[in-house]
Amino acid sequence: MKKGTYNRFWRWHFFGALFMAPLLITLTLSGIGYLFYNDVENVAYKDLFFGTSEETSQLTIDEGVSLVKQENKGFEVSKIMIMDEPYNTRLTLKSESGEEKYVFLDDHNEIVGSQNPKYTYANIMRNVHSSLFVGGTVVNYLVELAACWAIFLLFSGLYMTFKSRALKKPKKSTRRLQFKRIHALIGTIITIPMIILIFTGLPWSAFMGNFIYTASQEHPSIGTPLLKQQPPTSDMSEIPWATRKEAAPTSEKPDPHAHHGGNGEMPGMDMGHNGISVEELMGKVQDERISKPYSIVYPFSEDGVFTVSKGSNTGVTGLDVHPSEEMTSYFDQYSGNLISKVGYEEYGILAKWFTWGIPLHEGHLFGLPNKIINVIVCLAFLFLIFYGFKMWLSRKRNGNISAPPKTTSKISIGFVVLMVILGVIMPLFGISLLVVLAIEGILYLFHRGKGDMRTE
Image (cartoon, rainbow, N blue to C red; front, side, top):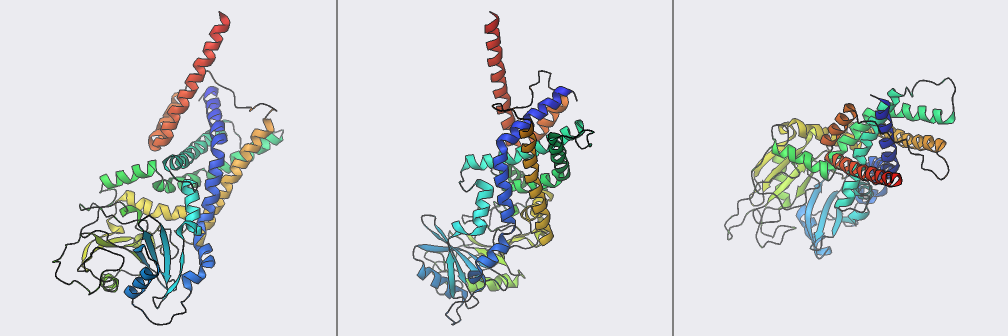
């Protein structure tokens, strides 16, 4: 590649870093915070997670749910997380206005306490990391765009490192060359680990995440198994990524005068008919050899189903399982019979990749070593940004941004090919490139017009 290509990479690398650095720093710091959400919450919420109620009478799970509903008027139970010992059972409640609440039951199914989901450590870290705690489509796209530009910054930095031989020790060292060498060395070491971290986080993104999931759904042989039934209407946040938007089967509505699985109205539902109790459902789950922990998502229509799932990326302390144990099953809400079941072994290669990749990104795929490796990579990335700015400040002149020089040479084929590849792999990045090119084109025409006026 020619010198003009180097300068073009340098210039785009500089401006990309300058504008995206604040976002990348925020995402990295919140990512480090999220890595340890299990450890933090086990200590911060130990009374709720492991404590017991002052009441000692033994209740059934259904009696416990009914008690929760009585003490939380205006809320309905939408989900139950059946945890393995020593964790307490956790209920998710929702109101008609969309307000949520967590309520915990001890081993006697008595109420231990409640939480506001908005302000739990895990949810705060997750919301900052994914949407800057602001949310909305524009913010979600901005966060994803920062991740995409980080990929470009790593690739372009790697190219400039080897093109300029930045790793070679200079004969005469200056502060700027020292900063450049450290910046180049860190970037070279963490490029591959950082790209893996970024790509394993993209399934949760707004634009590319939806694209990946759509591809997974439309091609079951490489993605997720196809269930051609009505989609569920309940919240699916604790269901595995691979089956989260998958269509669920429906329950067969019984004779309205017949009794199916109990005499009382099903907890968490206000549909005016009888259905299987949670206690009975748990018995059916046990018969299917589904072990704890797992979550139960209530049906919210007359032909809906109970969704029972085990996920490796639930975001709930104590609920995650190994990727190979992931499972989503559907039980008839009246008879309690198993209708269908989708396990990890039935996933296509794309779904399996992200089922392993997401826990790797979140730092709990292989325990503490996973967290330590992720922290080291994230800290190195922060140092990479720090030394990049130190390098810029060491050559920056007062009152001048000191951007890399413009180049008037033709764009090389290598540069175009790289940009096209990155734009195809990361569509949002590709769109942003078109915007950048349009701005540069307008500025070029503007300056050219001014030059023509001077010559008249």
